[in-house]
Image (cartoon, rainbow, N blue to C red; front, side, top):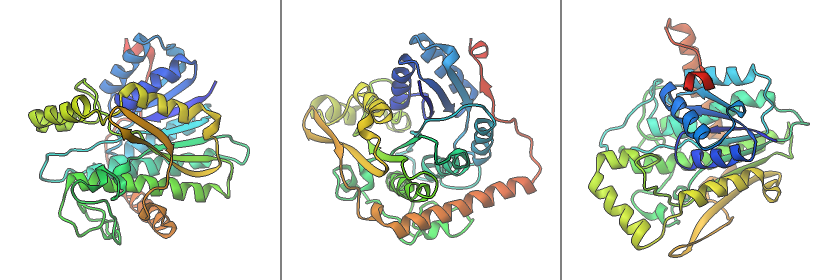
Length: 346
């Protein structure tokens, strides 16, 4: 049995895969952004027949680096030996005209989708040794690639010189020059995710070169429920989102089902055929309406840029350490990361 850490497990693909992995008997460490979401997740999993003794649910608000840091310390101080890390959290707030910012003042899409995940990896890397078997999986998206179907719609992903990360002031876009666009901000964050996986693989070569680091795209998934990735879009434009879902999912059949996407993530986690050392990118590509093919492909040219991957890591590390050092210099009143027990969830 494995011990698997999953972010973004309270809904969508993350919850679907957590249910499947839990039913197989694996021990799960799940992070949720609030106590309420943690209780809801615990209840959903136990009602799905998951043994509560194999669940550990932690509160980690990925819009707050302080919360992420404290949750990482809780994990590091435990006796858990993590065998798989699944960085799955993803958010987008399409429809809003003005940028939203995290607790530390970074554009919210970038802060949640990328910056918080890099902090998790920075902290947990200290636990890895040359004898530690591990697999890291990062949920990205083909929209990071300007030549992909989704990548061609609207402004294309592109980080430029990453001028927006070279200052501690709040910049709405990573490139520091483009007017704010929530769709491009999401695409850029997914490009950052692929670069993160690539640079992590490079850094792990000195620790344990056998560790697989996988970035992947599940395809377009539009659940019928009100939860999941598109909940903000539904709130901002319910009619537009309803029409988009009808045409994409029901009429043209270009979407992937939540069940299949969740199973793909389970396969990436457990199947030995994905246990290949180093960086890999997998995509669930549309072959024809109603049919997808999951295979290893090459990400965009920008995502393969070793120099940009290294610079992105270094710039983000500087932002993270600056933010956490500011926290230490400023008095604050906050609750430490809390673990939600089975009793509390009841």
